[in-house]
Amino acid sequence: MSASPTGAVENLAARLRRFLGANLEGALEIRIDNLAPITAGNARQAWEFDVRWLERSEERKVRCVMLRKAEAGQLETDLVPEFRIISALWDSGVPVARALWMDSEGRWLERPAFIMEKVAGVTDLPALLKPESAGSSRAIAQQLAAIAARLHTVDWSKLGVDFLPATTPETAAARQISYWESLFLKHRMEPHPVMTAAFIWLKEHPPVAGRISIVHGDFRFGNFLYEGDRINAMLDWEMVHLGDPVEDLAWAYRSLWGPQAFFPLDEFVVRYTELSGIPVPYETLRFYRLLGEVKHSIISLTGARSFMDGRTRNLFLADRASTTTGYLMQFLDWLPE
Image 1 (cartoon, helix red, strand yellow):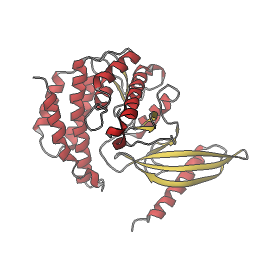
Image 2 (image 1 turned 30 degrees about the vertical axis):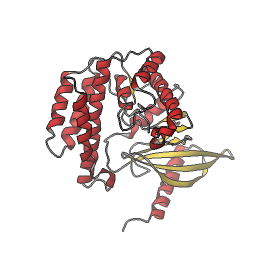
Image 3 (image 1 turned 120 degrees about the vertical axis):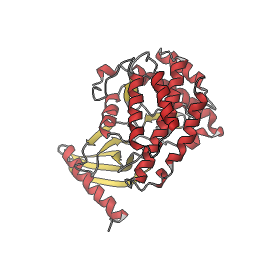
Image 4 (image 1 turned 180 degrees about the vertical axis):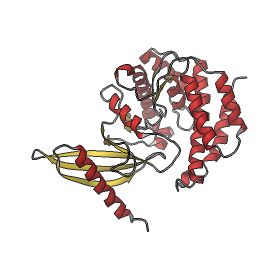
């Protein structure tokens, strides 16, 4: 018999107390309050809670968010690089949450997890895309361009990000093609000739990057916390890697979440280039827009395969394979003659 919801929360709270007791040197009377699940992506479970403890007779309190690896989902990623990149970017000018503690192997928290300080704000994508939000959403899109410029000009060689695989301007695109093709071959449930043809085209047209930067990998509306027209923290760094910064710009303007209606892509690129000094060649941008449609198709296939194999009961993933048709049609529409 599975544990009741109340019992599961109590069990997790007890695990958190033991984990934090091992990580808060000298802490006494550790308390976990207000522990509750919150909305998160399909690769992780998210919980919020307050932790209180006594330190040298003084009470300390931190509001926290914990991300814990899901059983299965749309992505096969390790939490460790995500925790380490937000730790590295703290105080860099890129808005991130403060990384606090990591259970990299799930020894304490059943599955790999990490804890961050909670940041104020919401991630309400539908609200941002409503016509009546055009003014504030345009301001947020302008700020997103500034954040991209900052992220892509950070001197990553001084941040200790050797946990990210090295690449070169000549190999950056090829590494991404190879990574996503390997997932396609692993998770496909039928031949997918259009996807196969898409990979052939991508392999024949890889651009040379103008520079190598930290690439968020899922840089878009819906993946940041905001209040009013201010972005407080970028979220969901699970696809972070070193690569061509243009990849992030192309992903930000996919039709599912792009701010095209109130801040056109060409305006975004102009602002980004003014702030970063990084040119955005049209052919490179088109390549990464094409790759983005393939990438999202494979994310969907991965989720559908997880459901089919019985590794998750998330009904959201049950029919995700059907979404690939629309993405690949967009790929074909954009394909140069």
